[in-house]
Length: 126
Image (cartoon, rainbow, N blue to C red; front, top):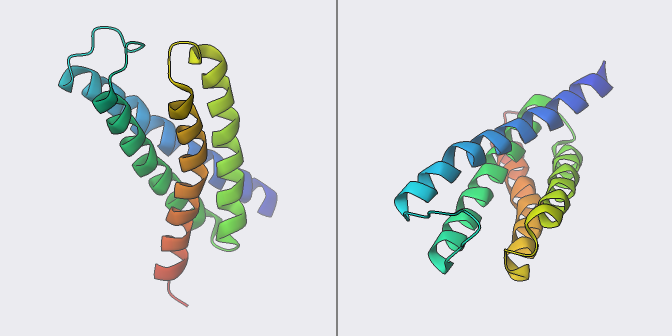
């Protein structure tokens, strides 16, 4: 039962990350009037990194909340899943996006997930 709860916590956190990114990507496209999402400008890249970090914090918090205990190891599981998906994204879009952008997304996501889990751990009742 603990294993299912742990896997469910990690998957739920990842779903939150994916939903936030999926919802905010079209908003950024409309806001910056991007005709082709592969033609990035610096403001679009910065906005994308910003909402990816916010999504990872929310995902890390939810993962820790569902897990109920051992919050940081669960956030690490979410971070590993996010890194794996970043590698997939790099393989798909790597030639049209700057390398620093892809590396930043892959690095900031797990750190932000840890931050979200730490917030949950610090705010939960004893």
